[in-house]
Length: 161
Image 1 (cartoon, rainbow, N blue to C red):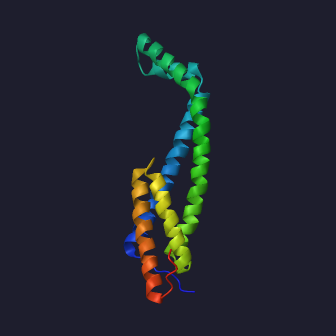
Image 2 (tube, rainbow, N blue to C red; image 1 turned 90 degrees about the vertical axis):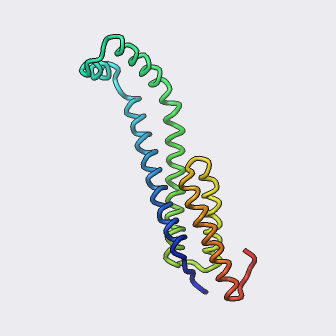
Image 3 (cartoon, rainbow, N blue to C red; image 1 turned 30 degrees about the vertical axis):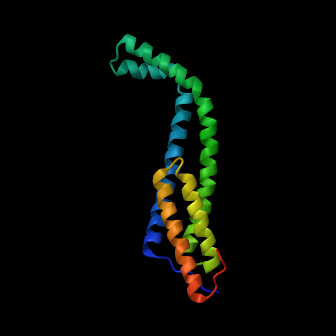
């Protein structure tokens, strides 16, 4: 079984993509935590903070009205964010295992080609909500897949992947 080699551009874009994917996950966790804190915030404490900030009574009343409305919408935002964050966390772990395995040449040429295809597909999906990550994964997946096809042709094991 022939092991794979990864070109430097594909390796770099994959590593940068994994870093950005981890940062995106951290940002979702931070935003979800912030929403949970705001949901549990006591209105009297918020009003006291505003008074200490030397705001006028009209500004405080306007802010408290907005805060009350926003606080009412938080449960509708919090649950989808938690679910979305958990799904992305699982996908991140899968990507971490698969992509680092390809970078360390743990897989055969055929299996690495399939992983690069998955990476390109995941990159295309990411173009919908994280364009930078999508472009990085698309570039890496397409280049890696092309390299695996070239290695397969050189060894005479062109399986049509």
